[in-house]
Image (cartoon, rainbow, N blue to C red; front, side, top):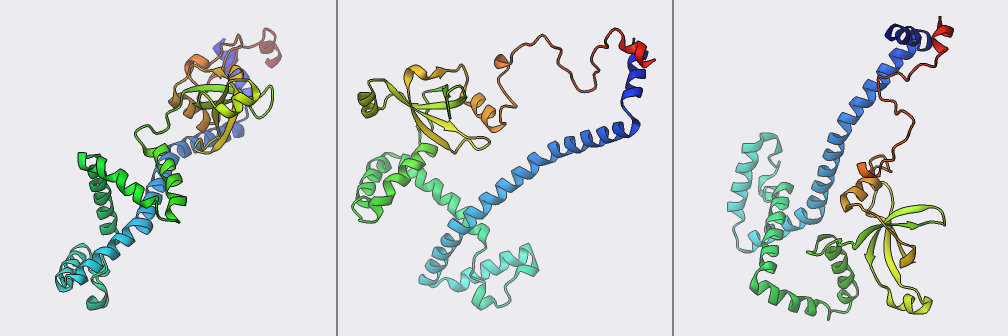
Length: 277
């Protein structure tokens, strides 16, 4: 039987096709091995640029202003130049008196992270929990700020708050049309006004898009048309991000047809070996 399979493979699969198949398999395996590292590097570089351009530069400007204000510019220049010389002689400023005080971007990034940690620790303290709400009330009295700050606060609380992204459950809904189902997150079990107008219990669900589940559509739908799914948030996110390639093991349907695996040949039909001969 094994000899028949090998002979059939030689007849059906030419050597050129075999080489092409080996190259394609090796290429995609290499791509699958390299892409995660490349994506990780891209995300880290993106985070670095965000911290540098929106936090680090401004923090450095404030520190440089404070140094000049307290008249410690000469000391700061000596320290800054010494650090630059220790790292590399090629990054020493061409005009030390004028430019040596300009702190490196990494200094601003480190100080920004330290500052964020200090502010967070203060807000979490007893004094901070009592003082921070009063500061927010003061901000809400400023004409332009009060039109922006509440919505910015809602967004940050949604992603970073202690109760961030608290979904009620994972469901399936008929969306975008009848007969087509989408995996969604139920975000609220009641929408009063619409429930009163329609006479049905309306729930709010968030239908994410693939492969970026942070974007999607907010849909209001009758509760009796929602199908609860026995899935965790992690399983649902994996399903959405991979476009359905990765699904929970318990959701895999068992079929009577044999599933072919890489490197295996399906069983031969009774008369096939005779025809090959």
